[in-house]
Image 1 (cartoon, rainbow, N blue to C red):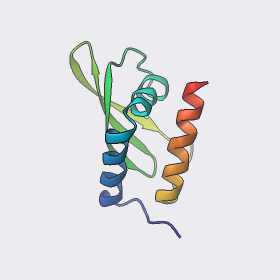
Image 2 (image 1 turned 180 degrees about the horizontal axis):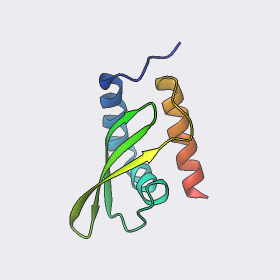
Image 3 (image 1 turned 90 degrees about the vertical axis):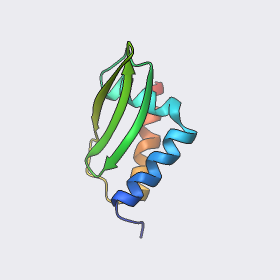
Length: 91
């Protein structure tokens, strides 16, 4: 059984995504946040229903919410969902 998505798990996921997968975070904002003009993006937090991003557009910081197509069950579900979203965005 995987861990539930707590604030600590959210922080861990965000830290990993922001340090190792910033290109994916930008894709999430552009494709699923409907902000194709995004220059940079940072994952602020993740919860079972979606993720909050902070993006830069023309020098301004803008919040973007990306809602998932299902409620995440746990951290493992978050992992698989984030990977699936990147694959979809790259198509």
